[in-house]
Picture 1 (tube, rainbow, N blue to C red):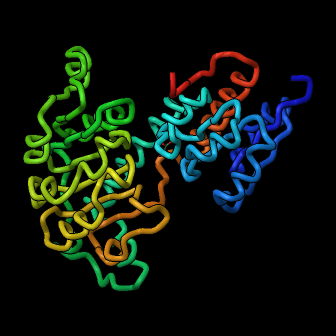
Picture 2: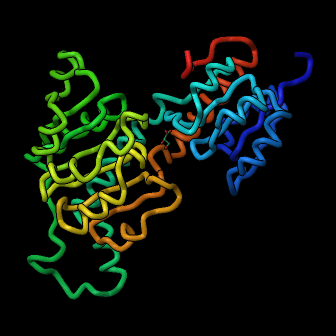
Length: 321
Ligand code: DGY
């Protein structure tokens, strides 16, 4: 290609991460304020050689077949927003940004866990609303962590990072995964592999870290909540659709579980209205990777992946090998 490659970026990414892209390519940044509609993607993508998109952009077969970009570089570790089978059939490499958001996502899982179990959001509201009359022996009592059990569902990079931090809080850690980890890793991090049923029955905190796939769709529904302790908390920083949200609402309303910390939702950015009314739920707008450090590194990797493919080289993290 004699001309500079044209790259469509659907959202404005942290500047430091974009530098290299601007040096080497003609770049169209769709918008800082909103994601493009499907129509806008269909109109814009054919004029570009590559796409850097976010998890909010739906990259379906129609779009891939009509636009035929040289590469789809997803600005996320998850890639359930992309029709990978179609991309593979059409020979379009898809890349993601693994590794760099492990700590940030593990940290937000802990932030939600601690916020919901120590009622931090309720407490903040209580103080701001001027309802605090003085110290009280039984005001806003929460749940202690030390000596309790956390169950990690999906023990890949992020699940493991959550598990590592659990030891500092003196929690017992069990996990369930598609495949059991090496014994050396289990020993090093004090992890016990258990079947899901057992994890649900014994955990005081259940933290979800599996990818969203057809197999994990609604993996947590009525039956799973009923198997959890009534005093247990659910933390979801994975993907909204691994949980059947209407059943979660029921479980919370009927005291089948004690509370939830949620960073992800089935129909983002729409949140089930009943969740908004529940005091024992802490909500965040999909902030798992939202630190300046991580989002900048994600941009660097997304840019590098796109540039490498455009140069005919192997990207750093190819999803559809
Ligand atoms: C990802 O990259 O998949 C995360 O959900 C972003 O926060």
